[in-house]
Image 1 (cartoon, rainbow, N blue to C red):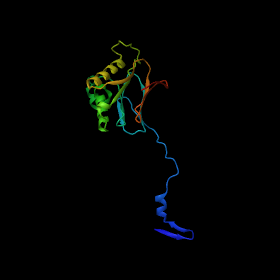
Image 2: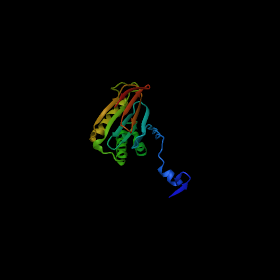
Image 3: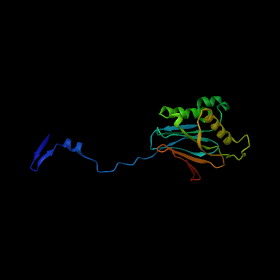
Length: 192
């Protein structure tokens, strides 16, 4: 319906709003940072999410990406085996490699990830206490071996590793493209 004016037909106000086309560019999507602490994990299917953990020393970050489904996740585990402390494993399963890694994968599956398409990278396992690579107290080395064992037993290949050494690391996974960035002292040392 139109109204008459001295200059011809004028659309009703409701029509003005329906036909209006925005002249501004859409706002850029802002990144949302999901920080993963020791004994925690996060999984996301939101492209704007960045999953990160800091000060990764002897702990290991298991980084999972599933590009076809647009899913990424990270587990930051502290210890290799839940048998070390069964009560803690019951309350905080993500603290341990053997109970945390399955949690990470099941959370990714619940968002639509498929095991055969998952890409896994592990980061960490540093000898920050200085016990040397052969010492039984080298929890970092034991954590790396435990992660490899759990993944291998479940038929999951590791696509990349940034493990060992003595420096703590910061790890970030970009959900949008699955890129895993590892930093030491603020410098990027690995992008995979």
